[in-house]
Amino acid sequence: MKDYKGEEILVIPRSLFDELGSFQGIETDVDRYLDAILDPKNNFFMDRGAAEEDPSFKQLIPYCLFKHGDSYLHYVRGKSGGESRLHAQGSVGIGGHINPVDAREDHLGMATYLAGVEREIEEELNIVGGHTNKVVGLLNDDSNPVGQVHLGVVHVFELDTDQVTSNEDALAELGFYDAATLKGEMLDRLETWSKSCVEALV
Image: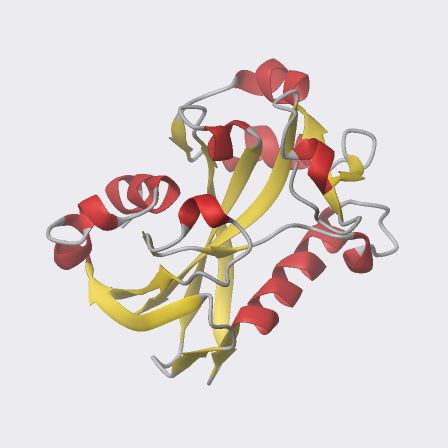
């Protein structure tokens, strides 16, 4: 088991996901899931090392796409990234775990979740100008070991400018690409979650 140095992350029981209606790929009926998975009685913090090896829990991962005009931000995952199983793959999603530092007065509800989203973005990107942020879907992929223990909440950030730079070595070769390019020559090099987003949402 990899040493995550005692990191705790927000999870829900897999049984709740199944009860709400499990799916493979993208689900755009956000309201059906979001209120339930962000209800404090349905989620809790769990040791990441244990969660990464236990598919009876789903780690909640905000997965954020950044759009300027008709183009989306794309990057390549560097070796310094936290998930070694995704290194060198292309991605259109920025995301990470919700940790206890994100906890707000709502006790693991929407405010806690959104605080985690904001922290992850600030840690990983420098964005010049304003933006809007909308949850557009949920993402699940049980076909591989990474996907089996994660549940993505897909956000689209509409950016006022394309002035975006990386704060981390793990995000390399940042650039904006249109839908035709992402769905064409770049598609086969995308990580599984990004491929699902590009095919269903872009």
